[in-house]
Image (cartoon, rainbow, N blue to C red; front, side):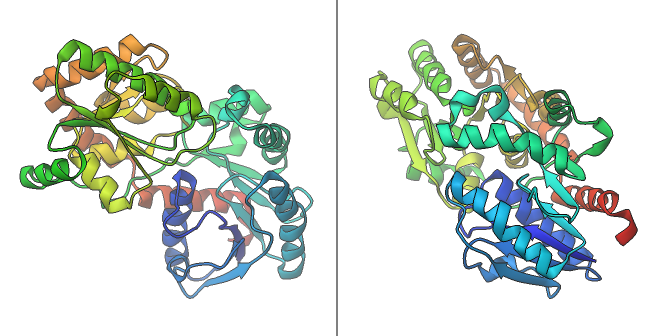
Length: 377
């Protein structure tokens, strides 16, 4: 079987959530199924790191997909031309975009549809593109994979898709995330937080990550506890973050907040494993990989109690209402002062992480591929 794959998100040192899903699943699928051939379709010169095995042929198609207009050209013209020429048996798209005019069966991985519920969190052109085309992608795909039961239910209800068309393929977490010794943690704190204890936030600086309220909650935490803790923010500044930065500039404890922007994965692991807790209080998530990474690092998690996060975190997380600053601050204070709670969450996290591995993800995605083109397997 010949499988064409949209690999435009495999960009060296710039792998986001969907990029990691693409990387971790394809690395395993191409290795485990040498009898099939894969065309990896990039929109720029690829890095050899992403050519996982001999049964992968990389293809570069322009233009680079840096703008909704260029997305349209790539998926409506460049990809269909490629599919017509090479005649693969399946088009797999780990970011959910598919060529609507192609006759090749498509499997779209739609991670979540937050833009459907919060369109004004997105710039004008992005939200218009998402709102117009993702319902069509869901309808035209022969099959859909998504990353949680919550997202499956959301796609079914929002786009009127039959539930039997959708497979749940949970994300995994990278084994690079492991605990640090006390001495190693001390060194990380010296490097990043002037030797002080700290909370950490990991994620793109977009509205649904709720950083605005996390900053407000941190201010309350500092005022009420008098502790010297800092807050480290790891992630790229993206769209609609100006309100958050304006709040930060007005904070009493603004100097206790440290923005690192994007840092290497090994550095993220070190910072996470040295923190008092991960603050992952999003008000909308399709999954929530940083929670699994915290479980692996044996660090407690404060997470939002909405959408998919309770499904993924189970009983290994301290939940807070993401729309209540007071509730977030209360959870931060509780996880700091209650040592028994901390130990209980860490122990439960050790068990919870075993439910989610990239090996399981790749196997489930392959099963979804088999269901999409059963006559080709």
